[in-house]
Amino acid sequence: MKIFKVLKSNKKGFSLVELIVTMAITSVVIGILATVVYQGSRISRKQNAVATLANEAQQINGMLEEAIMEAKVIDGYTSDSTVYKALIFTGEVNEDGTDWNTDTGTERIIIIYDNYIYILSEYTNLTLASVTESYVTSLSDGYKLTENLDIISITVDDTKQLVTFAYTLANDEADKSITLEVKARNTLDICSITAE
Image (cartoon, rainbow, N blue to C red):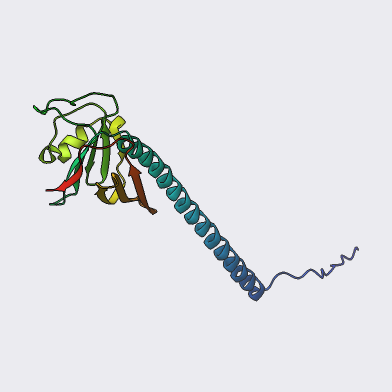
């Protein structure tokens, strides 16, 4: 008859307390890592939003500088009734109001409506009253500089022939304030922006 010996193992399992402590430590470490990853992605989104607005501001500044610097006339109107509107003509309009007086190719119409800025190179018979939401949404995207305009003020110093645009661009993540001063290269016959 054979005798079976049962070998006793010295292996111990983990106790319930050890498992609970390990899970608690792991949960804390995972929580800290998740917070760091979330904060990092939030900072990255904000930096991307700021960079996008900076690029947009650079494009807007370039187009506004070009339009104002080459202007022969700066004649504009602003209204702040329900939405902010502005029209700035950088060329002289003929007497019957159908075209530029002298078309040198540098004349522009700057249209500001609520959150939008457009620049038109061809003459369009516009009044401040005709600048409506349906009008600006009918314009081609090729004329649109931004739809992220938040605040704008336009001032004209006719003695120095200097136009100052102070504006803020804003999107869901960030905002950027810009002040642009542009001095006209030409002597301007008309240099005014009238509030209506």
